[in-house]
Each structure stands twice: as structure tokens, then as C-alpha cells.
Length: 261
Image 1: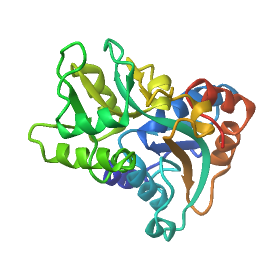
Image 2: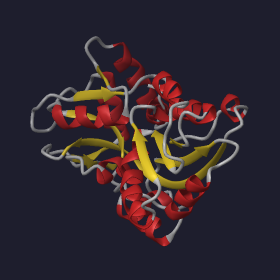
Image 3: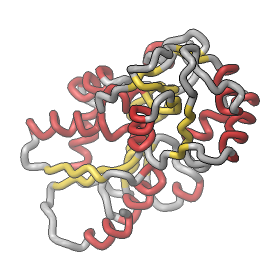
């Protein structure tokens, strides 16, 4: 995808077109904001590029292949040397999710450790538990490991288990959680709400994963969401970022599982 974008960079395109790509956790809400933005800015076209992820989008924006990258983590030291800049625009709870047809509404860290380790193989109704994993290098994997030493050990065991389901992107993971009976895995409240996914965000250790609970540290997990741009932003990008930060943009974010730090 990045190679294709680089090849297209030199082709003719509208002067006021914004190409946006990055983490799947952010794309749904940004697309909703883009639709509202376009109503008052019809001369600025917005194209969303799927499946770049945070790292791919940061590389793409540094090379000029896209205009605005969406990242669910701060820049690494090497990325900071690329001449890009970042702006945190919102946060959203990081959650463990199941399909809405599941009878499960809550999970504990101890249960997660046992699920990942393969010790808890059945849900209370007797159906099989199926874990959905993200790649080892993904930010979601790091966040799961950070829950507790027991969860980290269980996840390490799950990664070695034959036949375990890996989902490459945030949207792949959401789709797998929807379709695989008994599936559980990581997602974000922003993705679930903005994309109207048939998923339920589980209470963790008895706490609801709401933006207000995460903002007050009652719920322990959240993702930071960043805009990453090149050294010089175009007027169109500046206008779009300003719209996201406006009352209209903040309202859409709040309605879709975000809070503003």
C-alpha cells in the first residue's frame, strides 16, 4: 500500500485534496468528521487510505505520500528524526470485546490470564473461548501485556499455541471478533462506536470502559490518538485539524467514544 501511494504521489490531483491514513482505531471517527467538514468545505476533498497502521502512515506522511497520518502511539525516536510533528487530539478506552450476541459482559485480569494461557477454555454457557491476537509488534499487544505479569505470561503462551487467530489490522480484528463464535480480543471503544460494530466492550475488573472512567483513571486502559504531519502543513490540512478541534468536531468525537485530554 505504501509503495502504491509513493508511486501515485507524482500524479495529478486536486490542489485541495487531503489524503488521510493510519491506525484503524481512529479512521471511523475521522471519516464521520470528514463528512461533516465537507459540508462546509466542499472545495476540499478527503480520501481515506485503509490498512496503513500507525507506522505505515508515519512513513507515508514523511515521504509526502499522504497529507495527514493517524497514530495510536507517540512517535518513536527514529520517527521523530523524519522531520514530522505530532499533535494529540483525543483519547479512547482500549477494551476487550466480544460479539454482541455473546452472553459475556465482563472479564477480570485473572480470567484474561487464564484465557490466554489456555486454562479457561469455556465460557460460563459452555461455549468454547477463542482468542483473537494482534501481531507481536502491535501497540495492542504491548497494552495487553502491560495489564499484569499473569496476562503477559498467558499471552506469551497463546502466541506459541498452534492455530491461534492473528488479526493484522484493527478492522481485521473487529471483523474476526464479530464472526468467530466465542471470540474475545482487544479493540477500542472509538472503533466499535464509530463503525457501528456488532461488538460489546467488556467491563474490566468490574469497571465500565467509558471515556469518563478512563479519563479519571478508574478504567486503566486507553489509547492516545495523534495527528502526524510533515514539517509543513497545507492550508487544507490546517483547516481540517482546526475543524476536528472545533465544537462540531469535538461533539462527534465525544459521541463516538473519545475524550479530549
